[in-house]
Amino acid sequence: MTAQLSRQFDLVFVLPCLDGQELDYLRNNPALAAYLEVRPDGSTSIPVMSVIRAKGLEFQRVVLYGFGQDCRYDLDWGGALDNQPEHKIRHEYFLNRLYVGATRARSQLMLIDDTDAFARFWTPLQNGWEPPVNLQQLPESAAVWQHQLGTLRAATLEDITPDAQQIRFMLENADTLRQQGLDDQDAFLLRQAAGLYGQLGDFHQQAYCLAEVLFLEENYSAAAREFESLNSLDRARNGDFATALVPYPQTQGTPPFTDGCDRLAAMSYQKKGFGCPRCNGFS
Image 1 (cartoon, rainbow, N blue to C red):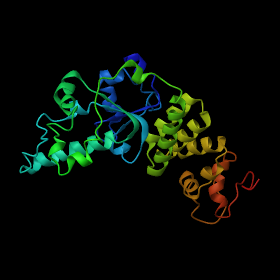
Image 2 (tube, one colour):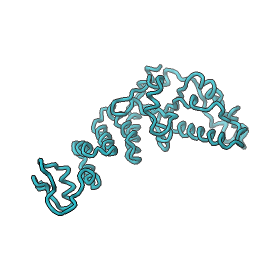
Image 3 (cartoon, helix red, strand yellow):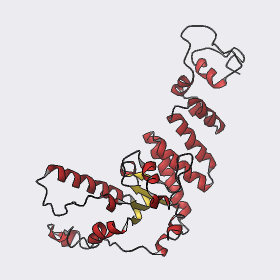
Image 4 (tube, rainbow, N blue to C red):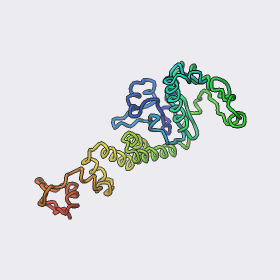
């Protein structure tokens, strides 16, 4: 089953780690490393992200990994310890993260945890109508909840068998990660998108995402070359971007180019009316 799961490239793993600690969590977790490969460019064979990064996003199939193991043993379902502020804050923080992670899935939510965590945390939740969740105690619970509850069950090989939708879901995931990475200026999400595009054979989108990563990491010259090779001249000619490449001259006169024409550098001088001494900056 592990080998089968490792080929489910349309999955997204949500981890109980802090934002920015995803790769450290993966590297320090041998069981998780059995499913996922960390590539040299920082992407993973199946996308992973923290709850904070996943917040606001939706994917067809999501894996919550290790949340039961991450839960404190004194988690209070009945509210008996509500008069202890520190305990209540920890309790609510964990449940908020669990809720956000679980609601990222549109069609299928899978749980992966160690054996002890399943027995201690997940098994008691198989029927939310009964303790410890005990929804029957809520006002009008029968009318509101009784017919809305899902169930937990052990996964079968059929549950994690690739189907005809895998490629479409992978593309949806890649597009979602790319857009969110651009919106949040998040190099990690852009790397994850690039990894999926590479698996899908869309090398143009893969290269574009990696060019944006170079830009976010302030490797402006390399980013400019990549954008130019992708014919994304609007990105290469962005005013702030060009300024970051080469500062404008402080005084009027010829730009201090000494060893040939640096066209990308010349663009920033063009905006101030200067030309490259070799090609005059306008050829």
